[in-house]
Each structure stands twice: as C-alpha cells, then as structure tokens.
Image 1 (cartoon, rainbow, N blue to C red):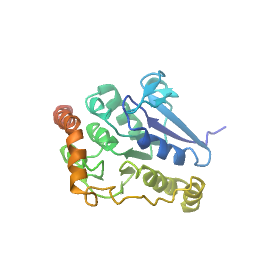
Image 2: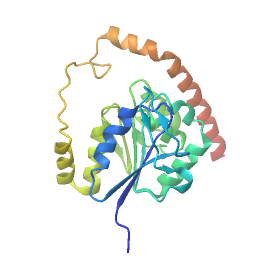
Image 3: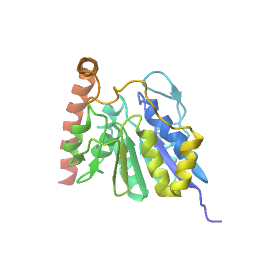
Length: 232
C-alpha cells in the first residue's frame, strides 16, 4: 500500500528557542494525515534555551524521506553553522523535500548549508543582514517565500507554518487550523520590531545580545569560507 502521510521533519538542537519550534509544530501536526518528526543526531533529550526539554523522535541516520524540512532558531544555531553533520543532513533532506522552512535564525543554518544562494529570505532582525554572507537577499518581512523555501521571524513562525499549510492542503484547511488554535494576535505593546520599539529598549536588547551576535558573525565568516572551499 502506498504511503500517503505528509511527513515533516523538524530539527531540534541544544539551546534552540522553543517558540520557534512549538508554534509551527502545532500547525504542521494538524495537517491532514500528518506525521511530524523531531530530529536530532541522537534520541537523547534536548534542552532548549530556557530549559524546556524536548525528546527527539528520529535520528539523522534513521530519518525517512521528508516532505518538509524545518529549522528553528535560537542561540544554539551558532555551533550548527560549523557542524558538518547537521549541514550535510540538511543538504540531503532539502534536496528531496518539496518544502524547506526556517524560522528566526534557522535561516542562517540553511544559508550555511548553501541552500539560500540567490534567494530572498528573512531572519531575526538582529541577524537578518548576515544572510548576505551566504548569498541570500535579506528581506524585512514576517514571511518570505522563494520557491520551495519559506522563512520568517520568531512569532511569525506560526504565520510561516500557516502559509505553508495553505500551499500543502489549501486555504480552507489552513484557516481551519488557525481557528482551531485561536491564532488571533493582538499584542499589548507595539514593541515587536526595532522600528516600533522604544530606542532605549532596542539598545538594551542589542547590548544583552552582543556577545552572542559577535560569536555568530565570526562563525558565519568561517562557514562562508568552508562553503567557498567546497564549491572550489
């Protein structure tokens, strides 16, 4: 009997931002005939950025062919930018998957895998310009679609997942999923982007993130060198 389930593979890794994962997970897991796998190198528990523990359901070596590949973001993406095993897995899985999705700085991992050259993409606002290093065109939008590649910001992960759901199963299904999770955002503050937030708040957030961002930029530079050597 031919298998008809729609199989999504969502990467999990130490120090990921769980919101990048769990919002989209709720959408993708509600697709008709969905199978949603949580992927990592092993089946050992993975601790997220703030301590939520996630249990992978499949390892890279045993992962079946995927219809959708998903990469969340968070502080933990920094090591992934130079992780040959992770990047090789993503290249292989993305080559076969009809849909490739990244939320927040997960798009930088796709870039480090060489998957975003000459493509429009977005990321977290503090890291968006780093996409240029990988040959991508950074776009300041909540959801960016370029061919089979879908990218978005942190809370925009739900928007991205709903956009993908409409492509996969139709607008009516996506709208039913949105209603089912009661996704009707009305934030109490207009501070969800650096353009809207108080400049003092923006400065404070940048200052707290400076060590991480410096490390990230250094790793991106090394990843670019590695990509160029592979191409040569």
